[in-house]
Image (cartoon, one colour):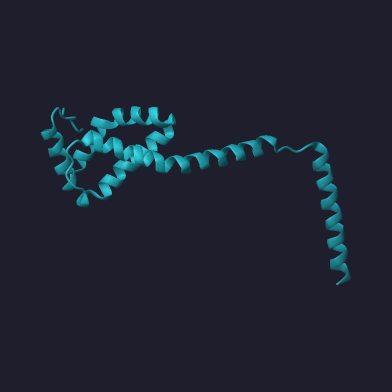
Length: 141
């Protein structure tokens, strides 16, 4: 189990950032734990959609990890992360809104989609009719 270290000054955070850049996964985890609540609250105030905020925060940390070798030094990690989450929220918001609209349309379609007993009877009649035509066609060959 990883012990969460309390980071209170910029030097501690700078050390975390340097270790992250060198490939230390525990540093990434510690940064995530240290700033997640602030990032989440910021995102909720910005867009008010919990799933979008969580996904965007995760995207930011995945991108940081993927690009760790090319990252520069950070003077204020919280400000850096808030700006990154803000940018990611703006990018993801359009996609998320489009997905919600698609889900809403699908939900409405499914909710309005129903069969009556007469439709089933009509389908059975059509099926019987088509079977008879098919059999007649086969016999004429």
